[in-house]
Amino acid sequence: MSRGALVLLSCLLVTGCTSRPAPSPSPAGVSSPAATPEEIPVSLRWERVSGLPGDDAWERGLNDITAAGPGDAWAVGYTGWEDGVTATLRRWDGSRWRALPAGQAGSFRGIDSDGPDNVWAVGGEKDAMHWDGRAWRRIETPVHPRDVAVDGPRAVVISRAGIATWDGTRFTTVLDQDENTVTLTAADAGAGHAWVTGSVSRRPALWHGRDGSFVREPLPESQEGELTDVWQNGDDDVWAVGTAGTSPLVVHWDGRAWTRAELPGRHGRPVSVTAAGPREVWIAATDDAYPGHVVILHWDGAAWTRELTPSLGKVTRARITRVPGTSHLWLAVSVANGDSESIVTLRRR
Image (cartoon, rainbow, N blue to C red; front, side, top):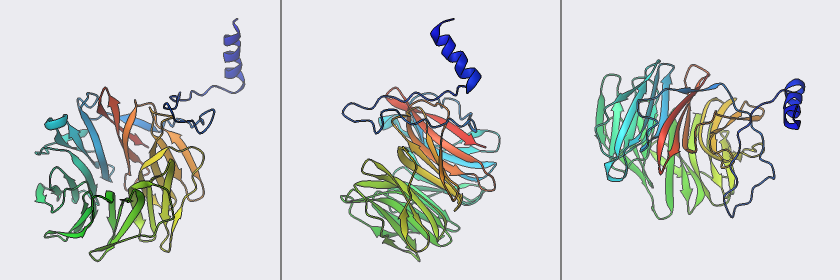
């Protein structure tokens, strides 16, 4: 028996062998933070869910996902390339994803819901679409939208540097900032409160909205970077994620102050966050050491744990959301396909 075979047999008999993803080498000119990348377990609880026909083709991607319940989820994105891009809209009916007519050029950038009969999607030039449980209604916004947050009859739409609110009748611009210094990235809302993430002068920033006005929040001091996503469980439990310099940035609002969360080990770039309460927080991150996986961080109220999704291909974007009334999660992922992208959807049971 060869030496290699003896080592393998010993591994199987004594400790068992667990396969680990092979991290890619560090890019040229960038030193690795550790001589040996950490071993993060691959979670088999993440299952790949069949999407729409052609999702594995190139020139298509998903930008956002939302769930109203176990049998009701929505995702938005694009198909095509350069001048031929068209928006895509899809719905999960409890057993499979179905394509819905989007009817517009450009890409849908964001989608949100707070129930099966209250869904907003935004994108294109100045387009917002509202689903009331029976039909879609197209509404023009005063800004070029990149994300939307739903709060009952109200909605918040953000552009690169502006915020507009829907009061049930019309949109009104409530904040208009300098695009040369301000970039807005994501929004969340509920119980009369709204939160918007982004950056000011290339530093992470966050705004709080209430009663139609928005003010910038005092955040812990950080390096250059930006916040890329936000989730609120209540007005005293808000999470926002992003980067500061080359480090991940996760901040939490407890109703009194913002504090920076201390994350374990290596954790890449947090890009999306969701939660079911203060003891059930999930973050999706990308990491160059694990280009074929999404790194998932979980906070249980006492400690952070990490896991990897199964191998997907080189991840370019990832959006995570919880499924209300369950412990399930949806993950919408775009992966590199040549010089374009294709789509993968996963669910964690």
